[in-house]
Image 1: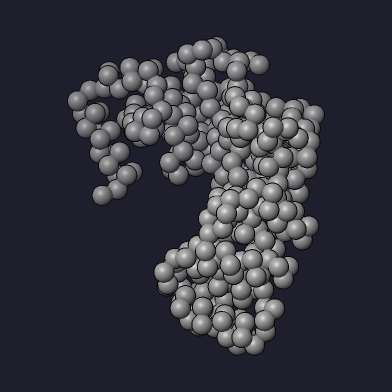
Image 2: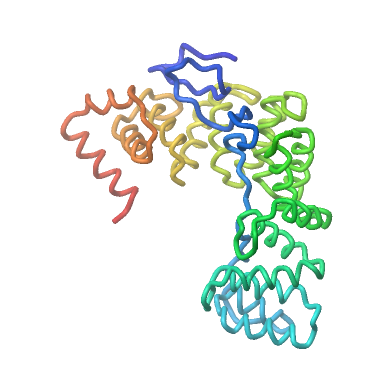
Length: 336
């Protein structure tokens, strides 16, 4: 690994874990878990609800009334219409899944995870991949049903067989979240998930290419998958790609482009991006040198626990007016 000692003001932007000086701030995912069952840092399972996008306007002729009402925020109507569908067709898995999601989120009714799990199971038993995915998530968390990793894995496999991107991604996570870590299988699951639009899968595959886990180490290939994830605004990917772009690692060196990537992640409250952007503004690398802007991002990163002695020193040297400008800038960013 090349630590670029020539970077102004000690700007260390190279992410390879375990190779930086002891006093350098490390960041980003590492595939060296300290315990066998601990997930590699930076690779976290989604296991999160996949909400339908909101829609405005009246229901169109021929449109599914239940889902149309749900998308428009008329949850009680959606529940009633879904129940009507189930009464007419006891095998309407899509309607059962909708009922489950309403109970899971407490949308318009009292939240009831046990009832949500019951409806997910009814839909999952009828082959609905979305229900299989969410029931797996419930089984992994012990939410509404007993925690059962084996059941969850089986459900994810069923959903993945039907091309469910979230299921594929989480199978990849499970492949490396155990006593025996199968990075080769994880890479294949991440690839399939990414090809189906799951950009957490794209980011995770990039990490494996960068580290040479489960696939041959290939930095340009890692950069390619990071770009896909960054284009979908995955903050971790934006940070990793920014670092590679700043250093010219696997991509063309471009400090200004790196600064833009850091900014994209920083405005969404990524503390590492905030810290790196602060250092760029402090040194004038990729952006105009601006101590006030540098200290704004430094204070925002520090507020969530990311310390930096070098930037603390820059802060101590600000004039009274600059300090006032920093305070005003932070307040403007945070809001009332």
